Length: 372
Image (tube, rainbow, N blue to C red; front, side):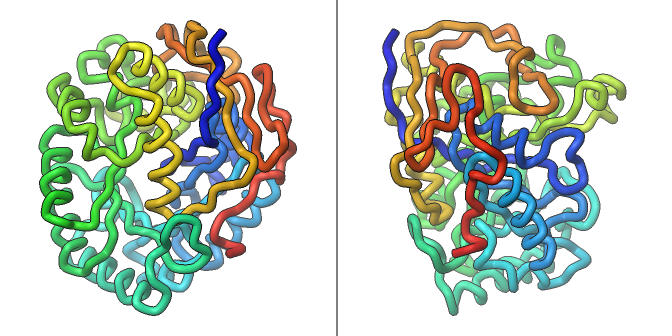
């Protein structure tokens, strides 16, 4: 048994599904899954129902999180086609602005260049008065985070450079994208990016085995794309799960073309990354930087005192659908042998997870930024 201590991890990209889809996940079940994965803070996306696109909806979601979460939660505000600039007055209360340029539905889909200009310009103007958040800052606003794929990546990079707006590109999955981002960083564009474990450890070659359980957005890419993510790891700022739970009944009750895209990931990220350490593909410092220090720097998140994760890095075990904290109760990595298991999580001096059990009470987590 070889136990090491890590700082409390951050997952900067989760979908906790509340309000509107609590049968898949809610703030309690999702944050319980976070603690089981060694994660003490999550950033929740705005594509709930209704979308988190106004100050009133952000405040409602914050109240729900404050009453139910067992780890810390930051909330994104979303740009829509229909609410115009309503999101701007919520800028300082959100962890950042989320713009969906690819693969989403309804009013959150932003599909014209003119509207993209307006959103980047409006966010930059909002920052003129309050600035952008630095690590742990109480004031300011966070970056623009985009779901942008392929041709929309250079468009977002150009807008970031034009308006001087910090940009974060979510779940990068292709060689063409990571190479563009790396080149933009070298030119001084204020851009950061994240990669998910499922895009690092799965490829399109796994789809025949996974079927609908492997359907996600961005889709699983080619083995060459996966290799490119590893080749350009220096350009990757964050590992984040894009935890997007759907029930198996939803996933398997529809044809592949109609199945809701997305997979759960909060409880499997750390063991998958620690297995890469065991295999010599990463080191512990890579995990700490991309799952703790960098997300707090990029989003201006405070670091909770007296908080850490104890992990047995030598323990080998098999991921399974049984025993998960996520409400949907499955993982695309079921059956995979991994190294490293969370033994204990301490948050602000309190043991909140130990021996496979979540010990924190609903409401013990804190809502970030909203009260700052």
